[in-house]
Image (cartoon, rainbow, N blue to C red):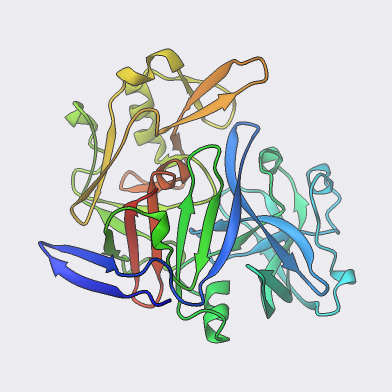
Length: 353
């Protein structure tokens, strides 16, 4: 079955219209929607090594780095999840270069090479990091054993395309509304997962590891003073956290407007579940396409066994972002299908189904 992408320029919009729902030879990687310890992750299983050692991983749209927990890691957080044991793989090759994650994630190790199986297809000689040291408890909150980087360049997507396993360097991410899982399509898009025309935006020239585009506006209904980027800002989908990541300054301003109360050590802010309906909606505009989210859609909900619930603001401040940058987490991606075209340097948005 063929899928035809027709790209047209109209009133400043780049739009892709589809005549068939699924690209030929697309690979489909199912994702599980896991909520645990105050966060959420869409996790899929990959195989690492020969024979494949199955690892639950997230697929990261903000990085070209892939890594898994090593059997050589003795930290309790490593022992609590599946580990990759290089000694059990006949295709393992040592690299040895040091490996460390940025932005205070506090894990390190060394690079290795081995075969990796994604969506049922095995590719060889993939370089990834083996985590051997963890000196922070941030990883305790995550359900996965590693991450597969899907940045715009130098990812497993490039290898799959170069070896002819997929027709091109495109992929799509559909993340279902709770409690539904998700789907990663490699090599094309699945038109059954979105209900509107795709709006495409060109990647910024500086977008090397992230799918970053320009948003003309980010506004809150009835609160013009809280426009987060009056002169435009950089936005990028981030598939490894539910939160909208902002500068600390912008996150503090938004959460104060929402009437939130800070709790814990990670900068999270609690909201009153009973009054969410009174809060303003947020609208993110890219290439003239307005993408609104209601308070229920930008809030992270925790349900407890005693039928109690906790509502957490979806806006989180991080120190390495400036006031002109915003990351769009899985709360956003559960409402909007995101399409990634590395061949043409484009990021697409559509209404998810």
